[in-house]
Length: 429
Image (cartoon, rainbow, N blue to C red; front, side, top):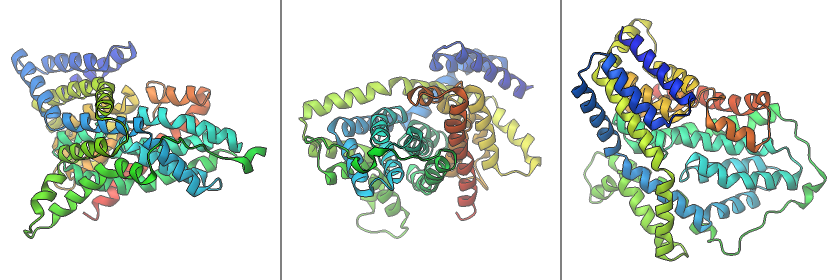
């Protein structure tokens, strides 16, 4: 009966999202209704909501805020465009897809998906126009790179919030995520478009050039600031993995904390960029403003998660699936993928699934791999109820059939390969 009530709650969430109700309000409303229908006293429902919001945001709100500041600083300073210029100049026209793919990965690490898409889409169109190549031939590598960073790599909201819920180590999650992201981005971003899009070079192929902004920072500074948070977190994680005591171990323990790593990265970026500190602080404020609603949605998702945990629904699902002899990582992916197809939003699907699959963590499912499994499921089969679907369709001027054959198929490839990669990694760790 409890599972039936949860399904009714998910159906209500689906209806509210279709009716264009704000996802934060929809999640809070569904959390309260579901808790009451599951027989929880009203006081316990509200206590669970407060606990869920606090436990979810408590360990990640600074990571999200500092990550947004970092991304906005890199965007406003011109570092993102400089990275684009250097990579395309280095790879040349013959390997233009590789240049766009690597650009998407590098820019996608500090920038959230929508911001990265808006920053890179003019470049995609400029390259397509100058070379005579189809827009999708250039655009899919960019979209695939941004998608894998969005689904698998902190400090993006999805992976960070899941890491907080599952009590996963963000450094390990980042390392495993990088192991997944690079090969998956290559398959979905390079080889997939080559299979479905006929490449046709125009007359302007030998004239292709990309202009460089004379006021942009140096290449070394651009790459340094963009990748600094990743390097700090990875260095801290590797340093803390050494079991023997040594002099610098407290330093690495400090760096392994994503809040500390991002704070250091933001401060260094502010100091080394050419803009004044006051202008840099304005960028930081704008960066946080851009993710305010994302943070609130994650908070509401944490509330719904806690209702599912406190009501025992997760344990019920665990008991029912014990006899299936399936990997908990696969079950987590399957539940999340089903919610993604139903609800549309990757973040909402992942947060909703987290309360159901939380009891799966244990033997055969590490918290870090559970984060990536749920992240992979949240990217499955994006279609008409996902804003990313419409963004891709409208920017590339596609009809629905073309969008399904390109964007939806690309997202599905990323999701399925993500699951296979998680299962593969699980066999070796």
